[in-house]
Length: 88
Image 1 (cartoon, one colour):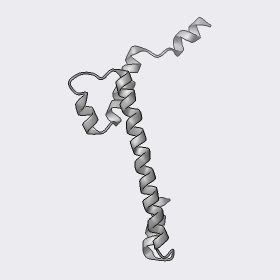
Image 2 (tube, rainbow, N blue to C red):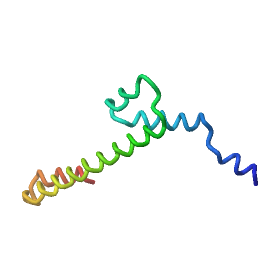
Image 3 (cartoon, one colour):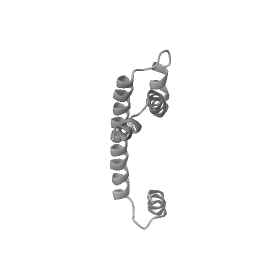
Image 4 (tube, rainbow, N blue to C red):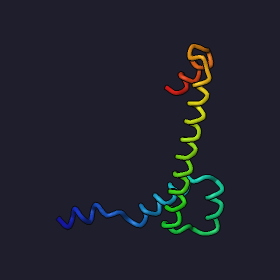
């Protein structure tokens, strides 16, 4: 049983690799701020959560704008066909 518990633990190297991967997903401006020193994992996770929230807001805004655009279009127009094809 203790062998299973030990094998399921994540190593420091694996944590560092995951932190690096998360850091690479942040926008360039956030990465530059932490370039001088390695950001602690807590700070990186907070930045990542903030970034994800901002992406959600952006998606919501774009969805709303798209809905407004589609409402003003003729549903049989070539433009509406293009938008529908992009959404698939």
